[in-house]
Amino acid sequence: SSVVPRMTNHNEKDRNSGENDVNESTKQKDNVDDEILPFQDRLDSFLDRPFFDPDAFEDEDDSTLLGKFARLVKSDYELAETLYVGIFFVVLLLGTQEVLRMQLYGDAYVPFVSKGAGSGKLF
Image (cartoon, rainbow, N blue to C red; front, top):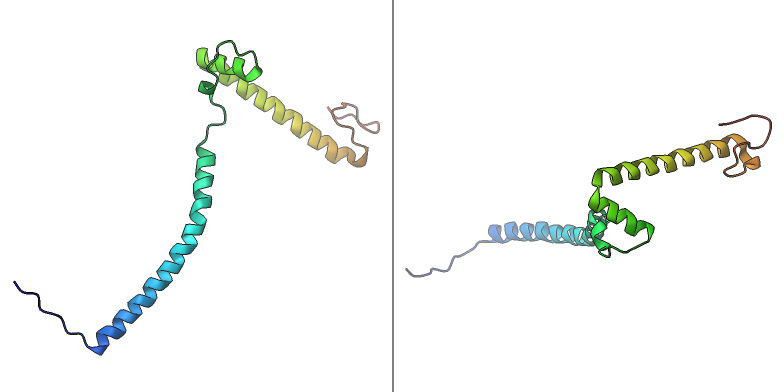
């Protein structure tokens, strides 16, 4: 079991140099992927982070609004979910109404006033 050195001819060297070109272009492509990867990692970590973590509010005597909501989430999740969705849709509804009023009244728009400019009534 002796090791015999392998003899190469010029054709194999030419073939190997072509593989090196492919490897170099792959390395360049990997460098571009490495530049994108940190952004992708940051985006993934941002999207994986919870919007609201009730476990972060461990103090039962927390009288802030988020502390009370965290306590509600821990004690009655379904009710907390219903309240969250209801408040979310109310905010969306008010926002869309104001955007519609802004579009309708233009420069004469007064925020959160039900009777905007002019004689027309909207809502």
